[in-house]
Length: 217
Image (tube, rainbow, N blue to C red):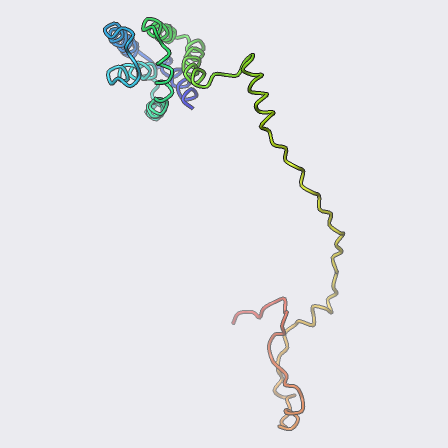
């Protein structure tokens, strides 16, 4: 994510950057170089002064991109990668080499070489991850493949369930007519209480299982 944000931001910065932007890059690089010269090879991630100068240099490269959202994203992602940089910085034994890498990056940006600057910046950012999580190559790749093969778990194929053919029954209109609403006709009702007792009471309304409902009144 950080690489995607910064390679686009550096493209915009190279396109829109002015003399003040170039001066900002040179200034932050000079201050970081002087700090490392004073501390020798004792500089490391986690020291307040060095962290501020290192982040300031990378921010200066993108400062002219014209997008505050990109700069905010760069700042957040830079801070989140702190633990990875700290691991990598333990292996850097030469302050001159560290400054040299950042000098080459600054030179490529200041020459307005967009493709070259993007490629170098992406490689610079990727070097931290590659150090912490080195890619498996050669003998390491064979070891990783062997471990994966030993620890792989075969998942059985689930049984196939066969379903019998289902035939849908087509019903005639006479079937549904059975569920039509019935209305009570007071004229046809028996006035005899004896017939009421003998005959099964007839209910008005809707039969059970009706597929429709009466219209709202």
